Length: 325
Ligand code: TYM
Image 1 (tube, helix red, strand yellow):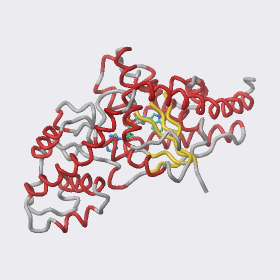
Image 2 (image 1 turned 180 degrees about the horizontal axis):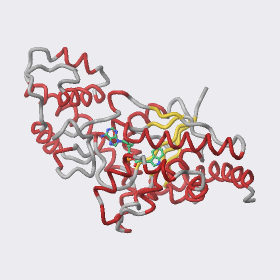
Image 3 (image 1 turned 90 degrees about the horizontal axis):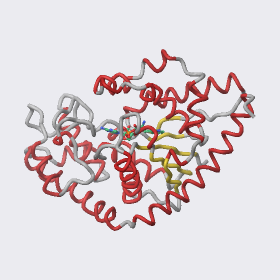
Image 4 (image 1 turned 60 degrees about the vertical axis):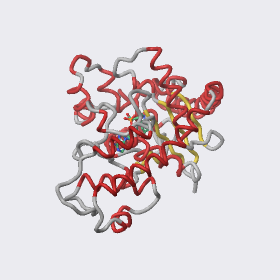
């Protein structure tokens, strides 16, 4: 039976291969089987101070990335979070059933507030509640995300159950959807930390906009393990990570790739991996550059209408159940 899929990405920072392999690639597969809704979460992005012009530009760029990656507006709904005010409204309501202690446990809040001590705002603290609102407004069954968002999907499940038991059956309980090899793509400069757009060095990540020369240079410089062999194992986390990237882009299994390189050196493996990445990103960037801004704006306008209809119906039920209407 077809299920509803919902996911989103913040229009801030540089989108990297981790975002693509952990989330967007999975979305593209899911949209063929399920009714899918993909959001650009600008209200989440403003939990860090944004330049307004820059935010508007990044929002449009993110929509283009979705399209260039293969999200098809004929199959999926693509829209901007702030265009549908029900997200903020439901977030407020869910805040009233969220315990402060639940939010204090969120590792992303702890990480983000320690990275940016000058701006530990209430929005950053309540961020998972807004994410729960995003998910619950659309009767979502599946939430395709990377591992770092699992704790947030878990709180969405908790809030859905709590609301249902307090006010009556209203929300679907969502499940995360994870691709094992892609759920946690690690930094190229440090295989113990996830690839991240806020990493201090650009050698941590491959941006979706990197040129072929840059990609080759970054992969050449990627750290490797002290062993000599190419094998898919937890005691070689750097090579394991590179094998995951290779396998996901080549639609193969990491262990198969590893056995194809048995007896070969890291240099040869990295050279081939660089060509696999270039072979994916070059056509991706061509598609990205050929997308017309006016078409994207129209796609977002159409998406807004579709999303408003779904979200409006759900909010009507929520207000009714709570005595707000
Ligand atoms: P964001 O914008 O930080 O990241 C977008 C997606 O990329 C995944 N990801 C990774 N996956 C694998 N390896 C990595 N190194 C890596 N880095 C990032 C993230 O897990 C995510 O799936 N709060 C969310 C956005 C959001 C959302 C939602 C997601 C808002 N509302 C509702 C799903 C449903 C976020 O900040 O993701």
